[in-house]
Length: 419
Image (spheres, rainbow, N blue to C red):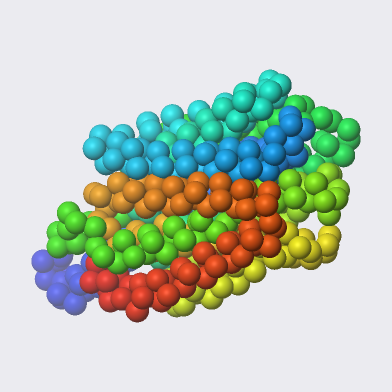
C-alpha cells in the first residue's frame, strides 16, 4: 500500500529537509567561490597594470632627475593617499551602501592613471599621476574588500578567501613587470612601456563591469550575523592590531627606492629590475595562498613568524650582490603578500558586516599614514647612511611582534564569540 505524504514518517521528512539544506549550502559555497575567483581575476589585470608600472618607477623617476629623498617622499605621499583616503571611502560605502559604484569609480581612476604616465615628461607630472593612481586604489579597496569578505565564511574562512584573491592579484603583479621587462629588453623606452599597460587596464574595467552584472548584491553571500556582534564601538583588539600593522608599514621600504639603490650602485642591470619585481610578486602570490589558509588554522602564530622573516629583507636588498639582492626581493615580496592577505582577513571577524567598510578604511588609513612617514624617513636616512636606513626598517618591523603576540592570545576567543 502506498503512503500519502501526510502518512510519511517524521524521520523521512527530516532526511529530505537535511538533503535540501545540504544542497543549498553547496550551492552557496559554489557561488561564493566563483565570486572570489572573479574578483581575483579582475585584480589580476589590475595588478598587471599598476605593478607593471611600479616595477620601473624608481629608474624612471631617476631618469627625470630626482633624488632618493624625493623618491621616498613621492612614493610615501602616494601610499598616504592610497591608504589614508580609504577612511573616507569606507565611510562613504557604509553610509550609502553603493559598494559597486564606488568600486567601479576607483578602478576607472586607477586604470586611467597608469597609461597616462606615457605622456609625463617631467617629474611633477609623473608624481601627480603616481599619487592619482593611489587615490583610485584608495577609493575602490574598502568596498571591494567588504564584498570579498561576504564570501569568506562560505568557502571555509576569511584567510582562505583573501589569500586566494591575493594569490591571483599577485600573479598579475608578476605578469605585468615581466611584460614591461620584455618591452625594455626590445629597446622600448619607459614611455612606451607605460602606454602598453593600457591593454590590461581595459580588460580590468570590462571584468569589473561583468562582476557587477553577475553579483549585484554580494552581501547575500554571507549568512546573517546575530545582532550581538554588531557593536558600535571598535574593540581594543582592533586598535592594538592596527598599531602592530602600522609599525610593519613604517619599516617596509618601497620597491622604487630599492630599485633606485640597485641602479645607482650597479647591483642589478636595468632590464633585471622588473624581473626581480616579478620574482617578488610570485613569492607574494604563493605566500598569500598558502599562509592565508594556514592563518585560518593557526591564527596569529603564522603572522608573527612571517613578520620576523620579512624583516630580513632590508640588509639583503641594500647590502647584497646580485644573488643576495634577488633573495632579498623574494623575502620583500613574501612580506607584502602576507600583510596584503592576512591583515584584512584578521580584521573581518573582529567587525560586524554593517561597519566593516569603515573599519577597513580606518585601519588602512592608519597603515598608510605610517607607510608615508616610514617611506620618507627611509629615503632621508638612505641619503645619509644606508646602514641607518636598514636599521630603521628592521627595528620598526620587529617592534610589531609583541603587539601581534598580544592580539594573537585574544583573537581566537573573539572570533569564536563573533560566530
